[in-house]
Length: 465
Image 1: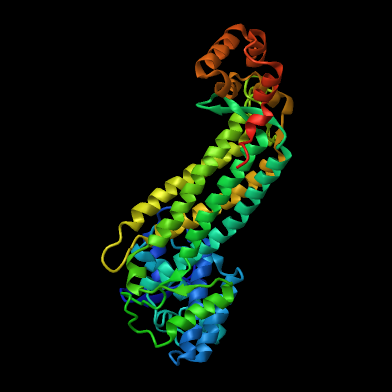
Image 2 (image 1 turned 60 degrees about the horizontal axis):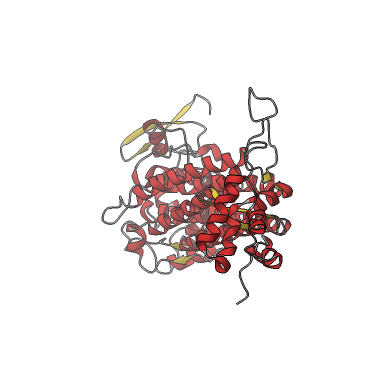
């Protein structure tokens, strides 16, 4: 942007706008008024709004509401922006006028100015294409913003679902590789009955699968759109057939089966689908935190911790201790998940803040939903590729812990009873010996019984049903 300006006006009066800007008066006002965070609309939200405007122009042209030539220019302008041009023309801060009116008008002004240029006009001269009368025909911030917000969330969560599938598969791969490795289970962080390392990793894969299912279901809820509700969900100033045409265009262009909300008032008043989507990301984050912390524990050491697995080394872990390696990617994943949980709190507060026909807190919902999805997508991709796929097992250490754990006495209780088994454990701990050695010495069990009952591998599978 150079220092020259042009003079535009809106309903409040005249405004100086940068001469080379594609946006207009209302955007300029917003840029001046809302210098809050420096954060602007995420790309999926911009993409969603551009698609909506392109679809609305096509629908309105089909229905005789605007000149087909004007609609074509709007569509061409939208396509240019969808291809990556004009990214710097959407400068409105995330924290802006309620409901997102400032950003919505930013979209309208950019498309109107560019469409006018395409038709041979000048920026700032809305002779052929007007931001409100043409680009915004039959629309309101009140129906387009929640529609764009849901679309943006759906796009971002779709990317996340692909990455979660990769993470699940990576854990399954490690589960297969570690299936024969016996180790001590732990409950309350204390020795417990044996388990196989592969079983632990298979359980991690199952947890990711379950969380991915929740994310997929919540993402599907975002496919219900309230477009065409106009200002209050009543469809004022829309033409008959407009809603279905917009939905059909959006579905065709994106490959997603968008559907019209059964009640346009509810779709405007309530942002339940957004809260549900964010909640699914919070649940996923809880699981990721738990798994990341398990990997940190299992890899602790290498000499004074558990050291049952080794995580790939990413970088030196200390500025003062030579040779130290940390579980860096697990730590990174934790921090991302903490941020997502915080974002969910902000979304939850915003969703419950709706009043009567509208929730005006949508910009913070949209920003945080997309941000959470993108953070998790990036973090899980790196965690999968640079951590999980490269995990190795310290098989000898795992077996030694399994065979020395006093908890294997649990397998003796059906034969000798809980109290006698407890005595064996207490003696083994005092003498620093294994339960197997003490049981053999006391002669309470035959060699065949000891071999059968105290086989750690046999303890890791339930009886056949």
